[in-house]
Amino acid sequence: MNFPAELKYTKDHEWVKLDGNVATIGITEFAQGELGDIVYVDINTVGKEVGKEQVFGTVEAVKTVSDLFMPVTGTVTEVNKALDSQPELVNSDPFGEGWMVKVTVANPSDVDGLLSADDYKALVGA
Image 1 (spheres, rainbow, N blue to C red):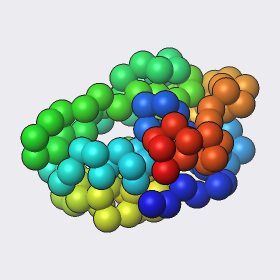
Image 2: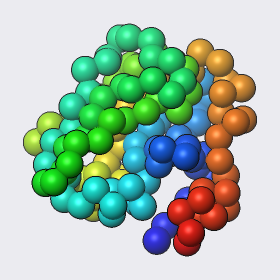
Image 3: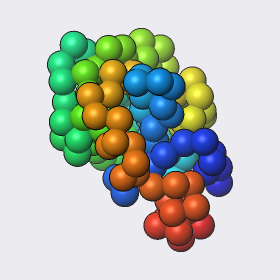
Image 4: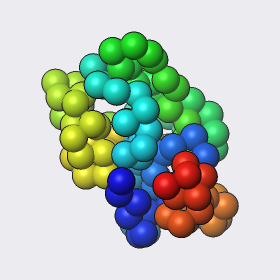
């Protein structure tokens, strides 16, 4: 299983890549594995500020629907449009082409409270 060291992680299995004050967010390889085949991603929060730990969308797999939790407070500026026609990108490339949203971070210190790759690996028992 892959745990990129340059990313930050949440206990709810989201990952965050920070570039200045823009965060790219998706779900981890562990999360997509637990969900199974992803068939639909529903995110309708573009242009809205979403608070840390609030729901910013849902991901639907064959047998379940799971909420997506915002790791940092920020305004959703972009949704990965490729997921509309290819939600399986979350399964095949969760840390790359399967990213979900880009957010302008309101409080950069939110990132400091997230898990490192090693902390997340310990959380999931890998």
